[in-house]
Structures are given as C-alpha cells and as structure tokens.
Image (cartoon, rainbow, N blue to C red; front, top):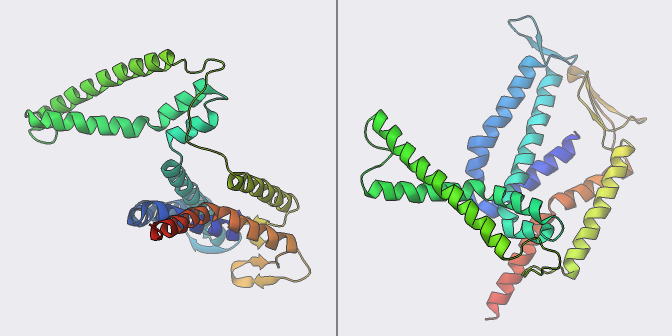
Length: 286
C-alpha cells in the first residue's frame, strides 16, 4: 500500500506495455484504465465513510472523507498496475514459452492452461474467417433486419462450435500419437538457459528477500484509516493538519527496498532495451 511503491509499479508497468504495444498502449490507458481509476476512486469515496477528514456531506447524511478518496485512488492505481502487468505478460509469455517451463513437470495441467491462454484469440480469429466466408455467400450477420441478423449469427456460431469440437478431438489425438506426457519422452525446445538467466533469477530472489524483510520490519508502512500515516513512527515528522497526514522520514532499509523494487519493476524494460541495442549493433555490422 505504500504510495511510492504503487507509483513505481504503475509507471514501470505502463512503460513496459508502451514498449510492447506502442500507441495502442496509450489508447488503452486513456480510454479504458483511466476511466476505471476515476470510477473506483469515486465509488470508494461515496460508499466508504471511514476517515476523520470530511470534505462534504452527502445527501444520505454520510460524509465524503479525504481518507476514503485517497485510499480509493491507491486501490485503483494498484488494480490498474496489475492489469497492465497482465497485459505485458500476455504479450511476452506465449503458449510455447509456458509449455517450455511447465511441460516436463506437469504436462497435463500445462497443456490445459496453454490451450486456455490461446482459446479466446484462436476462436476470435476462426469466427472472423467463418463470418467472412458467410458474407461472401450473402449471409452477413451485420446486414438485414434484426431477425435475419440473429439467424445468420446463429449459423456462424453453430459452425464455430462444430469446428471447436472437431479441433479439440484432433488436438487430443495428435498429442496422444506423439506420446505427450509419457515418461522418458524427449521434446525439442529452442529456449536455452544462459548465464544471464541465472543471474536474473538470483537477483529476483535477492530482491524478493530484501522486500520481504522491509515489509516484515514495517519499513514500507502505509495507513489510510482513520488518518493517513506514511512510514513507521520516528522522532521527526511532517504533519499536514488540514488533511490529517503524518509523514515520517524514510529509514535506510526503506530506501534500499525502494531502490531494489524500482530496479525489479523496470527489469523487463531494461532487458528488452538491452536486447534492442544489441540487435541494432549487430545490424550495423552487416
């Protein structure tokens, strides 16, 4: 809940998604995520009435408090950050990569999850193909009266369902014929663990340990109810009386934890930019 950590997560996730999707990431943020932020902040302020700093009195007699608005904003930013990280994950971790990591250890579960991940994109593409074919013979689901559009859509969905069942049977037969999941079966993979991968794994484990210690010792403390208090109590403080905000100085452990968290959050972007620079350097030598 610490505001600095939440801000770091938001900026790093958006920067990573912007790197992966370009201007499409900006559209997603402003037309989908930003309205969600406003909605969650407003709803939490209107329906959660904790806090000691009233800003206004609502028609039902309850108070709109500064603390409820701030915590609603913090909650919304947290949700948006998680969504952005999931968008990045969806772009980077393909079904092939997922199968490489878990295929040998839990083959059946890995196959089901991998198929689920590609379920919606594959079916959307097949729906588009069937719809275009139907449009070519005069059964477009976007034209005609309401009843006709329903009938044409029903035909397309019926074809899609038939294709889905047939595809599932063919996939199962194909995997069985290849001996998928059998003990001793070898699989080809173009992915290889390198020294850089080992170094990154070690760094992630160390970073997780540092952050865990900081959280256990309360160095990243944040409280929003009944009043806002950031960082653990110390001899010196900054008190903003108008909004009942108490700010304590950062401890040495908190500074280290925030630095590590920043590096950890921007690690995917750093790796991607490093590979891009390497690729540009190799191209210049051709």
